[in-house]
Length: 334
Ligand code: NDP
Image (tube, rainbow, N blue to C red; front, side):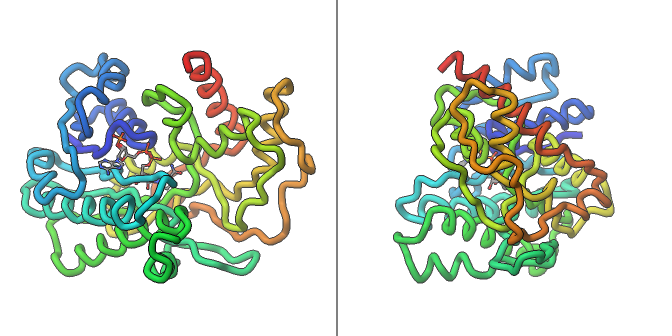
């Protein structure tokens, strides 16, 4: 059967597509332009006509997904803006995230044959200020970011605007399911910071996926000291996030649930320690080697994803190593 993957040229979506193809599915990917699909076309060449690309230029256009959803059995809706270059939080992040998701759901509801829609939400839709030791689960909701956007308008921090976009898109998703009772069921995947090998085209350093870009700053020696991070910083490898999407599409019991996907706490000290060991010649800050916990951390772990989707999370050391290897290769062509 055929699965639609939206925003297939994205960091996560490309892995979702690759794993679906490897599992024997046909894949239709949406792209903003066919030129952008070239790199993946080559990477997926061995799958022949099992993979196809279709243009959906604008997430916000009414009916934009109507053609793309025809004939598919399931959907992984991954496309959504993730960047911190925000002038207008609504225009740049919230509207495309929310309207894109609703447009996709409308199109899916108007088509026959779709069994399941998996939507890439985020831990951003879960996270809220919490005391040390607090254990985040799928019961938690980010109810604060949108309020902050409404209060501060264009002065809101970009990361808060992004969090609002993800929380609002997911909230509207579950409202859609409740009110419209579509024939398909919905699953959301809620990843924390995603690291791991990039398989899409990265023509220049400013095109590094946002979450990997945070790691690259350490590798590239752009940090003079180590970021304390936030108590709820956590990480997951992109291959596990992709696997969660695939399993969420095929496991009946996943229907109607959200899945926090996290391998555990992220400490930038630990990332720097791993990178210094791998690349001793690079100017990566020392900080306090080995002091990877401050005592204020919360617990952010994908227990449900482990139990229900069977994800045995790749650990930080492996993920950082594999991420850095790809970045070092890419550096040679920049
Ligand atoms: P990317 O930026 O690599 O992927 C984003 C995808 O969405 C790209 O395909 C991009 O298209 C598309 N897109 C973005 N904005 C628009 C727009 N306005 N109109 C049409 N298409 C658009 O990021 P990731 O792969 O990291 O993110 C993918 C999803 O995962 C997002 O929903 C993000 O919120 C979510 N996520 C990511 C996390 C992370 O740490 N990376 C953590 C939690 C959730 P194009 O390729 O043309 O730019």
